[in-house]
Length: 376
Image (cartoon, rainbow, N blue to C red; front, side, top):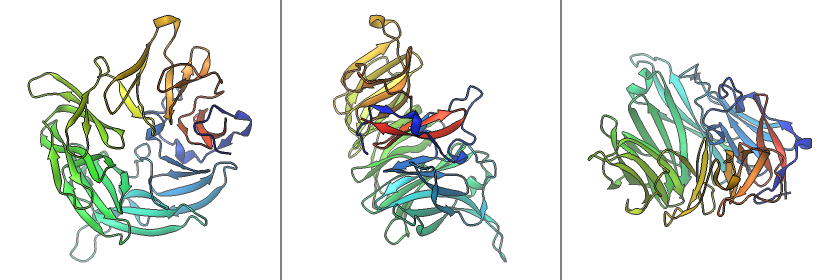
């Protein structure tokens, strides 16, 4: 049964997921580096699509049974890529997973590399609906730590970004013809929405520009001010957050409209060290070790904040944010907060999930990810 958002999670129905879901992701404390959003897992209805450097598995969450599996073709570019695989993305009735692959030398052609994109159907028998490859630039073959990410898909175009050392390139792929629509060297795409791709474009060393490019053509539509050591993250369907240092040395932390690059609002002061996550509804939730806060991504208004010791409360360690609910570990165990008000929800969630949808919460137990059925 679907619960949107879930109030609690039933440990009695615990089902382990494949080891690929957390392989190379946990630290010595048994915690997932980067949190749940960096796990190579996409939840879609009652199934999980679990990616690895070499393939993708489709797992039935109620039983843990693998109901579909597709492998990349050829030799993986980086055999030590465990821990760098990012989650697949949904594109209509298909789930897209990119892989970094090596191409062998042939005749007078030297060995090279490609991104192979595999699109798996979201309905049984969960087979590859199509595959396509895009040639990698030379720097990607030399980089010691190169990653590929499916950033998003909309209006028939999927965006894939490859990042390595101080280089990046983004590709727009037609999801109907499976052909390459455009290539944008130097662009690290971060968000797809409102017909735009928003990201960071190479400028001077460590000082890129925030840019918006047309999703269909890859043509640059706007460019913001260059920002030293920037961080960009999606902050809503038409908003991104950009933080860093301006050319004059002052700190920047603002919300941009992706359609034209205009500043929607300055972020509230004091949040520049926090990582913020859009709850896929209407709220931007920001957190670090000792504080949690929420911001309206349209106006930039601070909705609430919770710091250790204020009002006799202790900020939870946030594990997941979804559809108006903040899940985490509090002083008394698992806790859920209302994302708009910060108030404790009356029902104890029984677990602190890393990923959530209407059907399950994915919980880390002894370095193994398991699905717990959602309750309302």
